[in-house]
Amino acid sequence: MKKKWIAAVVGLVVVLGASIGIYKYNAYAAKEKNYVVEYGDKLSTDPADYIAGNETALENTKLDLSRVDTSKVGTYQAYATYKDKTVQFKVKVQDSKNPEITLNDVAANIIVNRDAKASDLVKSVTDKSGIKSIQFSRCDIKKEDVNDLSKYTLSFPKAGENKIEVVAEDNNGNQSMKEVTVKVTEDYLKHVKGFRNFKVIKGNKADWMKGIKKDKLIKSIQADDSKVKLKKVGKYKLVYKITGSNDTVVTKTVKVTVKNKPVTTVARSNSYSNSTGTTGRSYRSGSTSSSYGKRSSTGSTRRSSRKSNSGRKSSKGTYDDLKPGQSWNIKYRERNVDIGNGSTADSLSLIHI
Image (cartoon, rainbow, N blue to C red; front, side):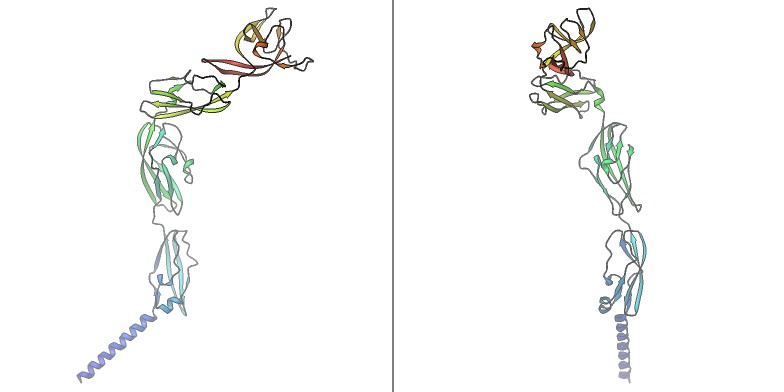
């Protein structure tokens, strides 16, 4: 009798086990009510990620994820179908990642109250959802452009070393913050006067420091003319290096134009007197004066619009050709040409009539 009971219990266990096994084998259900995917990530198309079922069922499952948009945060309905079984589940798209701020490797050196670029401080700010805003502490924001940091303009009102907080927010409200050290220096160019562009005759020397004055905040000024070729006609850049009281170096660039020696170079005088005693503006070369107009054979000088094609043969004059009793037309004039020895003059090219 006892053996019969044992056999009955064993049989019942076998049946139950088999039933449970069959049930599990035929089970077909969603693993989770909400399947979570990160914003911007690729959505899985493997049924095993969503459905609990046997191998045959999973291999023949058709997923419907057409309503899911991973480019927008939200919860979406999805479906899995195998034969006559359809399972509903939800896909939740979430953005849990903060923007990534990458700072420049070298500490920025910025001039007080001058426009600076955000790209001088920050190399990049990125996020899959896009950047909504970027804020900088302890400075004035003059122009915002979160898509191009080289166009994002800042200004720092006080000189000194400052720790600036950079806060970025993405389009889904996530924020990141990093701290960057900014060295804001005095605007030393405001403490130097006399910078100008130069015009130099080819082969002559120029005094680059003539007329330049500095105040007590400037330690030194050096003119770097390594790129200027005084023996070759052309346009060049002369760079001044200004060292301030805190050893910060700023630069100022001016233009240098090297020109050929003109046909006639004469120093400008304030007035002339002709035979009639009339006084006016003229150019003096040795003992000979040439006016803005013409010098007639009688020695009197007057303005004239008469061209060189007046019937007489024309030729180019030279410095030694200027003689009393001749008539000349001014063809070309340029003011303040550097003629060496720290002097400047007006340059004329004259046509002998």
